[in-house]
Image 1 (cartoon, rainbow, N blue to C red):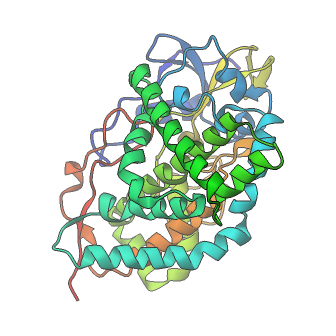
Image 2 (image 1 turned 45 degrees about the vertical axis):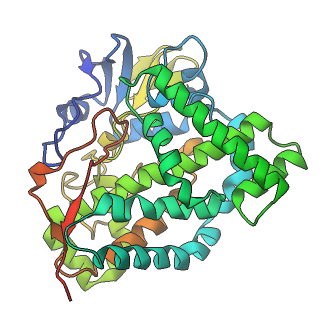
Image 3 (image 1 turned 180 degrees about the vertical axis):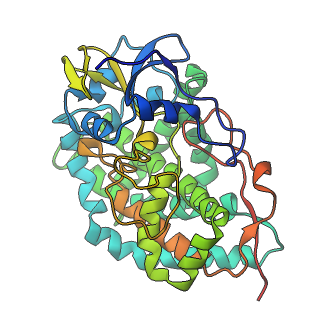
Length: 400
């Protein structure tokens, strides 16, 4: 099997959520291992089939560390992640992940559910007490995961506007100026350096204090690793979840029959969240891998040293795995989607994201008459982002 001619990647940014699916995903259905042409003129392998993407995510011959190694041009979110745990391979990645994994186990996260549910009720109570419409992004979808991760990590939620500005630069696409990214990184690192000094002097019952203790008592972290890991947990802990919440609400409003099902039977919500993660195209730019040796993938021989981009959103709509993949069905039979990744880099906070999404939907579907305050075609994504980021999500509801 040979790869087809080059596909330009990434596809043009959608003007609104009502835009049709990008053509590139249709191309990857017919050719799941394809040549891609990137904005800077370089080439990469675009991987779109479910089994092929899963292999890239789990096979150590596809290396994140090589993708972030000196000498390879990095732009946007790739540059932001270059010195973080996200850009490491085992065993370095495993060592750092073990230090924080205990905070994200199913048992620990389930213990947080009552607090997440309380925050959901608090935020809904606050915005429903104000005049309609409300921007669900700023009144709910963003503050919920920010407050959850800030409480878990030990970061003052009042500082949201401060670190939110840096984060917005760090999760941008390949067009973002590199100097601006490095400036944002420096600002966030300096912020955490000061917070770490505070926790060192006055430890609390939070994840940051535990990481400081691991650094100081067991010498299991360097000071730079401590700062990088803290920054990564904060940014990764709310950016994707916030936009997943907003886009999940949009998906339900666009499918009123599915929304009615959840209202009638809230027990469907956990499965609905899995369908949301599969169906919603949250990521625009995947983090690259580089082949450590020649690898056969889907009948195509990829030489060592080649850049490989696993397109998870294409894999999650592979018709050989998902029946009627373009349909949004909250009662879909469970199938292992790749929305949280797989392998060594499977999303550390997947369980936390599930709980936040479940409780967010549980609270919002109880709002009678929840509806968009504008036509769907009026909604806009923020330009230049590595994830689909709604500029605003104005909604109304029925007063009770």
